[in-house]
Image 1: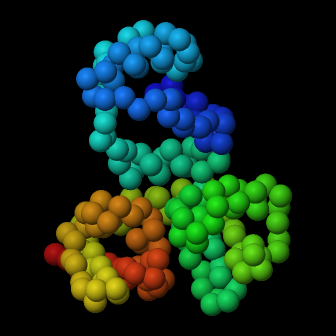
Image 2: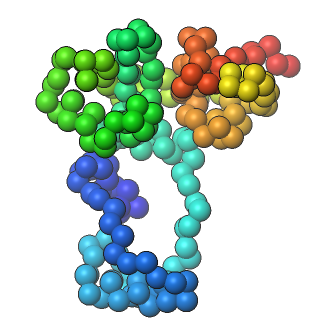
Length: 203
């Protein structure tokens, strides 16, 4: 939790992930203990490696992800308008947008930091979706995501999958609840692939 609180307080840009060494499974705790002793990392409360159960494979729920985003001013969704196609796409994060648009990491952040107004590469216009909007959408999602069916049409395969709830669909597709509801309301495909329809007449 100390790392999570620090991320929220100082922002993700104040931290980095660096791989110090690759080791085999048999030696992983020995090498972990070595680096804990030699580097004295601030956030490691343990003195020996491998003394706590591993959280490998454990991930935050969509609720937790949204709450972290709401409490972190450096995390926000962004709207990207392509001036060539006049299509607006909403991404859950800067990282997601950069991957989708094949833009080098950090360039969108620089766009915002420099308060750029001109289209990026004379094509893309970026806009932040502030946390107050996210909070409103989160509350709407919280009241609407349960007890309804979600129909998802995969445009690339022309197949439709019916999920028992928005929660189930979000979990299976790894897409935020708020994103599903937003695109269902807009009746527009998400990432040019998924078309969502919420069936509110489920008994």
